Length: 151
Image 1: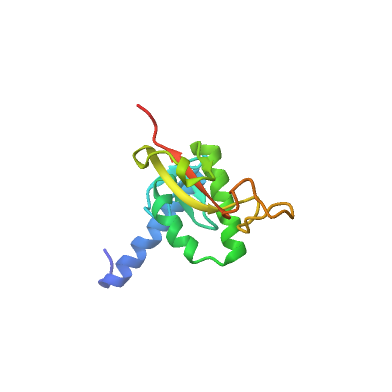
Image 2 (image 1 turned 45 degrees about the vertical axis):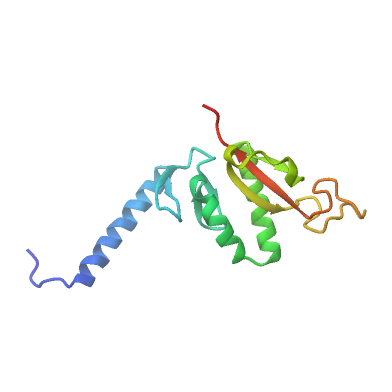
């Protein structure tokens, strides 16, 4: 039995320390939490968590996290992380890139839709020193779509 009674701050501090130790132990076992929703995911599933520049974000939170996080980044840093996100979505979630908004799938068929800077022209609309970028049709942006899974 403790000799003195603990304050609420001391109890909370001790509990936080224990939670941090538990999270560290889970990380050693290959389990990490999403920085946005705090749910835990296995790191052995490469499509579960995106490394968002020092914070791990689960696929389910990308839709909400990216627009907010993107607005906080400066030009080159934003472009680099956005490119990394686009490749991650393509590799692990079968995202498709569209250069013409008229050809986008119906919104009811979209699971995720983000507008990204064209990786080829870096948002200039000009590629390889020419006045035309065939990857984004001179817009400087593309649409990255993850389609809903068909049952």
